Amino acid sequence: MQIELKHHQGPLTLDAIFTLTQPWTVLFGPSGSGKTTILRAIQGFVRPDHGKLTLASTPILNTATRLFVPPYQRPVRSAGQSPRLFPNMTVAENIRYGVPIATLASTPALLDEILHLFRLEPLATKQPQALSGGEKQRVSVARATASAVATPNALLLLDEPFTGLDYTLRDTLATDLQSWLAQRRTPVLSVTHDIGEAFLLQAEVLRLEAGRITHQGPTNQVLAPERTRLLTRLHS
Ligand SMILES: Nc1ncnc2c1ncn2[C@@H]1O[C@H](COP(=O)(O)OP(=O)(O)OP(=O)(O)O)[C@@H](O)[C@H]1O
Image 1 (spheres, protein in one colour):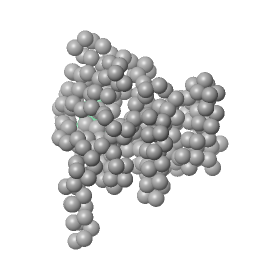
Image 2 (cartoon, protein in one colour):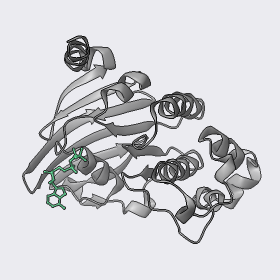
Image 3 (tube, rainbow, N blue to C red):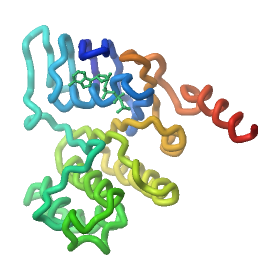
Image 4 (spheres, rainbow, N blue to C red):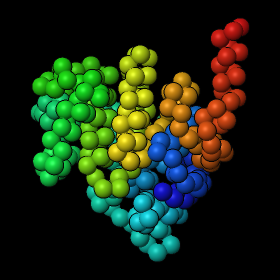
């Protein structure tokens, strides 16, 4: 996927050009650097001043030619920072919601696999009001994951997907989800400012500073300064 975005928004001047080449890419940067704005522009909820987006060789935005594919027609699925679940549906129904009936018929095990992947089997029949914040977050990411794997050539966007989870669950879930999605060839762009999460994923890292991509490469290269700073703090 090729992404070119130029946009003014409040104090932010976004000027980001990058290509997603790996199965999982992490967008890493400080608060306010524009991470969520990039995800929202890819979804189609922010219309950039200037921009060009191409997903799986299909253009979905080109301000020069006035091309703007609306959000509901983009093969983009996402889970945001605050889980928004259907309150009148169970966990299983929420996850099933974005999966076409034809997909459920051809891959009947999909829902069970996702419930298992996200450790949600014991909660499958509960409604959102009976869940903790971390459980709701898991359902939200599970729903976006189910919909992404059921959509041809989809890109999955995850904004702070493991926030609110304890470290043990986060570590297992992140690595299991990464390999499960890689097997299904569903690419991911996730946002984090958690250095532990970035190292855990062993993904390609895009480092964003004040609206600009300053580095792109493997985690241990791009985040070496953060790692050194963290280790120094732990040993002092
Ligand atoms: N609708 C808006 N109108 C004006 N300014 C906005 C709007 N949405 C966000 N901003 C500003 O744009 C900047 C980038 O916001 P964004 O949410 O993309 O940052 P972020 O890197 O995702 O931050 P965080 O890690 O805190 O979620 C911030 O300064 C924010 O205040």
